[in-house]
Length: 135
Image (cartoon, rainbow, N blue to C red):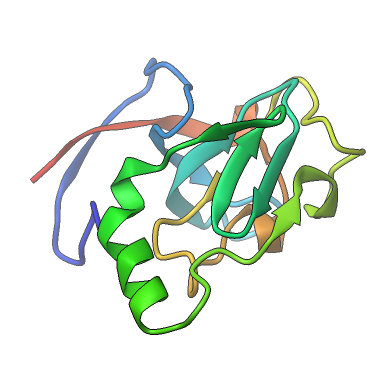
């Protein structure tokens, strides 16, 4: 919902890597240096779980305000926006805790997004910068 086809963005290479920040990064495991923009959901040292459309970090629920209208649409039309999973289910994870130097990222278009659920955790060295301005 934040970035649409045709938008232009400004990336800050030294932006703070924090929860819910959009980042620009090289997709892990790709030899063609494909890049993508996704939202940081899980930080190093955290345990992440999605259950019944709710995000839980270390057992505490976190509200994703940016998904408001999408969640309402999913409820009204009887479909799941974000399937339940834990950080242990993520490819290349080494247990339930996200290791140092790695980030769990998800796309805002959850039902159709390719993200950490598909290609695994994103190493910090793959992160080019944070999305700061969209126009």
